[in-house]
Length: 134
Image 1 (cartoon, rainbow, N blue to C red):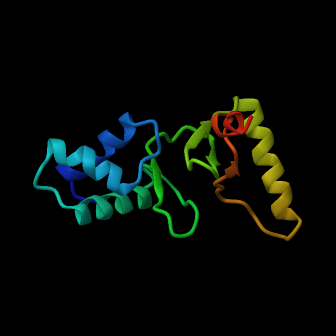
Image 2: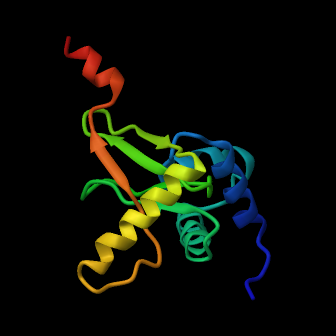
Image 3: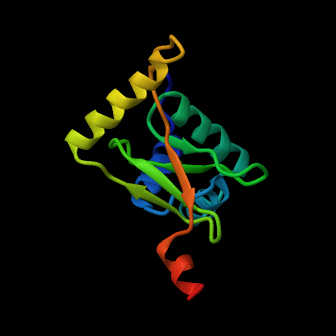
């Protein structure tokens, strides 16, 4: 059993309050305002522990860019804009979510595999970047 940590609880709470899928560095900047003695390595270590324990989501972005984190565990997809790198949540209703999960299971069966979890990151241009071209 993991031991209780004030730092971990604070990191989790800060992440859950944010809706913008921050990087570890962005979270660190929020945390040092509240707990000035915390180090960046502590933030990274605790984010890894929170991810491993299933308390947060990690969104792996383009190679060379920092991972993003999400404190919202409700089933949803992510969309990353390839222009501005903003990540947005896409929430499906329960029926659509069930249909998607069934489709993913069908795809896995095509190669005699079994789906135990999935992460979907859609990529393209967000509305703001699309409209800026016009």
